[in-house]
Image (cartoon, rainbow, N blue to C red; front, side, top):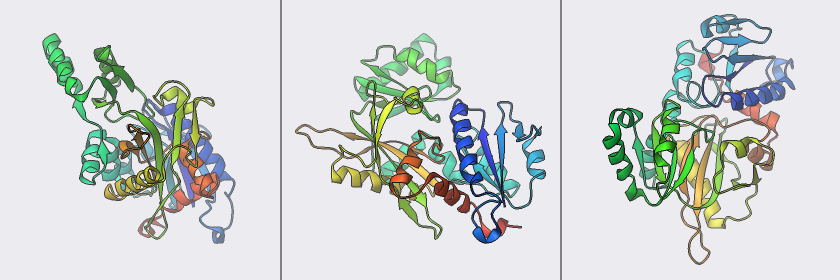
Length: 348
């Protein structure tokens, strides 16, 4: 079996994806070449970069369309998706791989598309009884076509959400394009930043509290294993932004958590599992929450931020950190994800 590790992509998260892909390749290569009885170790690992223009470039410089690269791979090839963001995490690529009957890691078409859209995720979360912040979606087309008066009405409609707002791309990740705005100052410019990414915007009330995230890992029998939550303490400000996520001194990530109550910790784990199951996700997911701080020192119900169906797999990523605390090495985590992408009907 060959593990084709697909990385790069066309989204703003390309650099993060490249780092994830290289880390996965190194981990899988530790077991490459072992005999079949040592399954699920791959016999070989093939790094492939999805270029910004959509072409695929395999190790050694061979470049071509996705169909051409896959046609040159052995029948027993599994695509390990180390992609993030639009074009890799939104169901489009998953649909293509199902069409050409190549097994892949992570969630399927519908689950990926659902979880990529923060508004749809919020609707599902509400049905599950999870807390979400008051929020509204703004379409880029409505903003551009409304003129000054239309834009003023859209901004006015956000006043009911509260004085402190958080603005983020509806389908983006890694905090790319996300920002906080207080008392409406600079809100229009911040929305323009989101719309410039080609996405619509989600504007939410900025909930204050402790940021916590929790990963769920599918098991071979179809069950799910909830990994220990990770508490995130940004080094600067209240917002765990792109720079802090991927710099060595960007934030303290505590696993086990240190400041969550036992009840809040349990609620984060239960919420992550409930959303993973309701969205019919596969492989691994990571769900982010804010735990509000209540008067008197208590902690409220965790408020959903988003769910990620292809969590980062860099050295600084949260999923590998939680897995290590649960006793699972990075190499074994990658092997488990690979093994979960092996539907018997697709093996040749």
